[in-house]
Length: 116
Image (cartoon, rainbow, N blue to C red; front, side, top):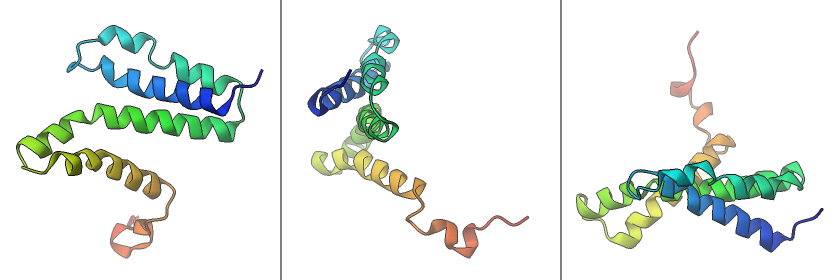
């Protein structure tokens, strides 16, 4: 069975948007029981490389949705304009992804080396 690219993106987005709804601010805790079902359907019949991409999309959307409180705190208490505050979780996600791949060079700096 093959799944079209559009359907993979739709399933990943559905899972990514459902996951944050299970947090207390939305009071829809029952959504947690089936929020990841679309993601499992999407990755079941695809290659590991494509499954990684689909999972990364769903995870990015879920993380950004779960970090809504950062946007509120920056906007209300930090007086940061809403559009800029909205970009903060996305920028953090991009930095985290880049850091996990080892492209930031932080691990090469002597002050971050582990002393044994």
